Length: 119
Image (cartoon, rainbow, N blue to C red; front, side, top):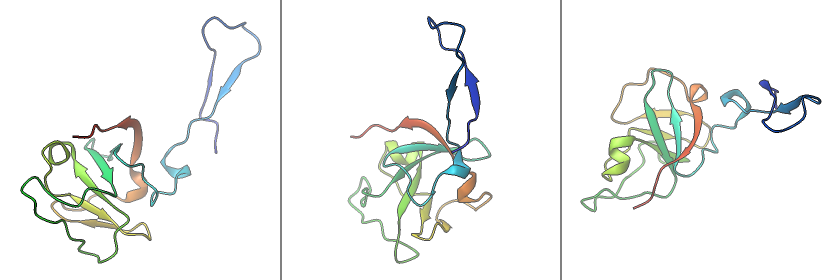
């Protein structure tokens, strides 16, 4: 893990300087995306990762195009309204586009640290 920044925390003495380690996408195994984690693509789109969502709002079953899937990536809209995923992530880390053209690589995703709600 790399140290990405040095931060002086409020209400603490000026010395010592506290180091804060921040993980970026190059430090993560992207086949292990957080359940309901919100990730940002290089073009600014936010996607929600899920291993467990397997049906749409109308009860249709979501089937993998690649056969074996690590997780699905949903746009915020499709997540909120139980729509179809936009991408699949294969266990090997391969990105498989479903509804979107692929214009970025999986290792370019940035974990925003936010988590999508359940419903």
